[in-house]
Length: 480
Image 1 (cartoon, one colour):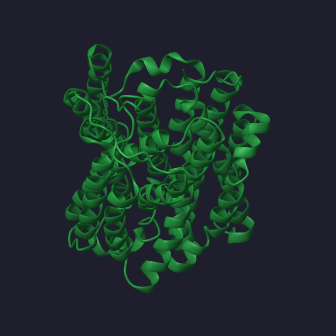
Image 2 (cartoon, helix red, strand yellow):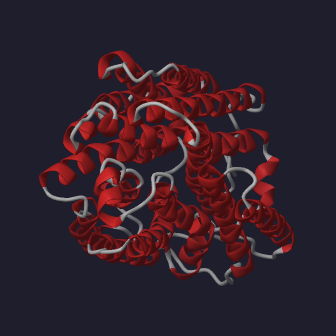
């Protein structure tokens, strides 16, 4: 996204400033749009075994049903923010929601695996237009302070709650109807949001500028090559020619992306945002945390259905404790931030995620739900609930109004790219551990997943160390 600039108090004022009484409805419409994005990141997880059987995916290739969405989403988020900056954020949000609903319809009607992957990628494009505009609209409507913290706490919880709700909803829809409804459910919701946006959300002014097409192209292609290389390693091993070619191509493209962004007049990723120490630490956190979390959701879904032999509905309900704990804890996070500051809350949340990953590392084929999964799920709910909103607040605190859109867009980009890259890494660990394994299918799956959980725990530990040694813990000065 050049990065969308947040409106200032004068020239960038909203075209129709929302009245205080309407802010609740405005927030509801905005977070519903973002909730669609969060739900769709996991709603197909529980349906993966049915999708694999119906459209003939390999076990490792199946991860592309998730990666096709998150790659297009994360790779184009910055460009999507720039579109909102130029044509108006409400207009961009409406277009993104409409495209998201249309691609969900196409995915629900897919009869071949290539068709489904193309629809999932198109969903990612719609999400890339949707997400930056939602956060930018919240930033422009709520002044920095308690009211913005409250709005951000609700907004930040939507990604985590949406992801866990998606697992439950996907289980229900797959059991009661078909895996196709995990995608088709977006159609009526998208239509309702698109109709509500012009009525309840004020448009922001357009800004002159141009798109950083070269940055968007090299960044997205570089990340796609990197994920492809990891998936190839999981299937064929580290000596595979195509995997090595993918790693080399990714290195060239991502190096070119960095050079382009350092010289572009209106870059989609302004490198100056990393100059602030706390913000740089926050960005590292939002990159690393989803890297372990998304992979955990993926493998826990496979274990619940293929090892514990749960139905899709029961597998979805198995994640309900995580959802309930997360929904409960996020309500108290703004108070904890006001009393303790971001760093102690972050250290606690990330520490819980490290423990949860370490617990899953010890998972064995004979473990049941209560003995093997329930405890880690509760800890993950607490950890995610305590981590994401403080990271968002750390990144956005003290940002100049003209760079609020850029900061929020980069936040979301790193979050979703972290999830995509992390999933590909954990799938590689899984594939390497199980390629020559012996035993029953349940034993092989559990052993490979446990290795992946262990690596996910190490990723969470890295995020914890970044917060401990990079983020200062001092409250930033308000932006002028």
